[in-house]
Each structure stands twice: as C-alpha cells, then as structure tokens.
Amino acid sequence: MGKKTKRLFREVLCKNNKRGHQAAVSLRLVKACHYPRLLELVLHPDARVRARLCSTLGELGGYFDSGPRLTPLGIPALLQRLHHDPKPRVRAAAAQGLSHQVRPGMLPALCIAAQDSSKKVRQGVCHALGMGLWESGVTLPQKRQVQAVFLCFLADPDAYVREWAAFYIHCEGCSLDSPEIRAALWRLVDDTKDAVQAEACATLGLLGDRAIVPYLIRQFETGTVWSWNLDAAAKLSDPASLPMLQNLRSGYRKKHGFYKSVTETIKAIKKASPKSTRLQ
Image (cartoon, rainbow, N blue to C red):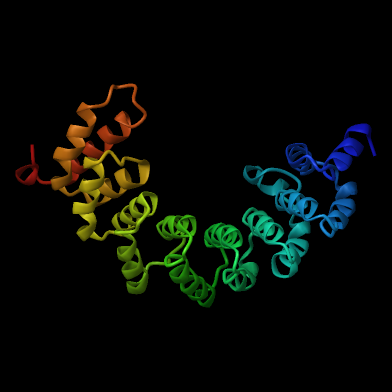
C-alpha cells in the first residue's frame, strides 16, 4: 500500500468531518486490491466512518458519469446498511450511494426502505428509485410498485421528498403517469413550499395537462422561471402564455441566463400556434 493510500485510509477514520469526507471521495478511485479493506470499514463502530464509506462504495471505481468504470461490488454492503444500520445518517448515505449503482433487481428493497422514519433516508431512496426507473429491464410489476411508493412520496411530510418525487415523474423513461399520480400532483400545485409548487406545475405541463397553463403563467408573472416550466410551456404551446413570456424577456438583458431559453420557448409556441390565435 502506497503512502498516499495509507494516508487516505487513515484520514477517512479521523474525527474531522471535512477531512474524512475528502478522503472518502478520493478512496473511490483506489486500486481494486484495496476493495476488501473498504468493505471492512463499512462495518466500523463509528457511524461517521460508516456513512463516509457508504458514499465511497456508491461510486467505487469511478464517478457517476464514468459509466463502465463503476463496479457493483459494494451493492450488497450498501443494501445491508440501508436496512439494518441503527443510525439514520448511515442509512441515508447508503441510499444515496445506491442511487449511483441502482439496478432493477434492487427496486423491491428500495421500496421497503421508502417507509423509513428518517426524512434523510427517504430523500436518498427517492433519488435511487428515480434513477432506477431509467434503467432497462424494469418490469411492469416493479413499475407499479414504485408508482405506489411515489404516490406516498408526493404526500411526504418533507418538502424535499415531495419536490424530487414530482421531478422524477416527468423524467423520460420513468413512465409513472396515472390518474392517481395526476391527482397527487394537482394537490401539490397549492403546496406551502414554492419549489414544490413549481415542480408540480412543470411536471403536469410536461405530462401534457393543459389545465396547468394558467398556473404556469402565474409563475412567469411572479418571476418563477426555470428550465422545466419553460419546457412545459413549450410542450403545451398555449398562445395565452406568450404575453407574459414576452414581458419576461423584455426585462432580461441578452446575457441573462434565461434570455435564450425564454426566447426559444416563445419561438416554439409561435411555431406550434396558428397565426390567428397568437396573442400579441
């Protein structure tokens, strides 16, 4: 074991959270001969160390965008921590780690973990399930099971869980749309949290629900502009959205981050709308 690797293994055990986290990040890229040591540490008596190692095992062999470099070696250990660790921070780290390594066969276990009393764990499970639905090989019964979980997530007491559940529903490949899901999303249109409202409106629009148009216009009127609700407005292509979008664009400088996106949305609506129905 080289000096750098020895230092990383030493620092991942330290009490300094920042240094320990940085060591855990670096340990994701250690040589395969050191993997057994990583798997041992996931059982360390210190919950902080176990949580750090869950993060390491989630991206073992490379980062999320490195594709084939990721190794599923740590999945059994992560599933074990997710279901049996007494500390919520460790279960949450395991769920987050699994979101990088999720496979269709893991969905039933994640659905069980979705009932965890810790909001941090439910947040991680929400990400893992959302990412898992993008994978090929997900069966119809599994999707129905996940759909039932997401109905619960949309009514979760934690706003973060509600927001991300709404996000994953409109992601391409998830296929969770149903009358029950639509009804749950409509209840979130009046959520107490602005971010949840915005995500629910965008998702309903991206699912093709034209009744959401007035709500999207209201968001644009209050300055709530982001890529998803612009995409929803473009997909619905309702000319009633044009005046507010044009008003928004007039208030932006050309270098503004959303100037180009708003302009493209306006063009998309005009292209899809008959000239006689366009509002000037």
